[in-house]
Every structure is written in C-alpha cells, then in structure tokens.
Amino acid sequence: MALKGMSVGGVVVDGGIAPKILPVIQNGSLMRRFTSKRRFALMMESLEVRVALNLQGPCSLGAAHIALAQ
Image (cartoon, rainbow, N blue to C red; front, side):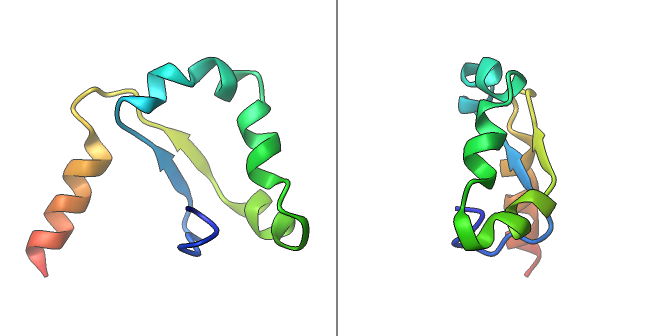
C-alpha cells in the first residue's frame, strides 16, 4: 500500500495487526520484504516505518480527525 499510495512521508503499522506481526518486525523480515521492490527499492528504503502498539488505534483516530476537518 505504501508503494501504491506513494507514501513518501513514511508508514505506520497500526491497529490489531501490529502486535500480531511484532516478531516479524523485530527480526527484520518485514523491512527486507518491504524494501525488495526492484526499481522502487531506493524509494522504499528511504521511507520511515513505525509501529503503533496503542490498542486505541492512534493512526485511525488521526486519519478520522483530518477527514472531519476537511
């Protein structure tokens, strides 16, 4: 989705999936797969990837706030 949406500001893994895939994030497997995009590899390597473990879903709440403000 980061590549499809051209998320040049970075990516936040949020919601119920974040705690479930934490071992994959910690051992580096996620980043290896995330950055192995052939001609887009340099762009993907430049993106900051963060994990939000707050079960309240801060990213979802932030997105909703922005959507309501527009």
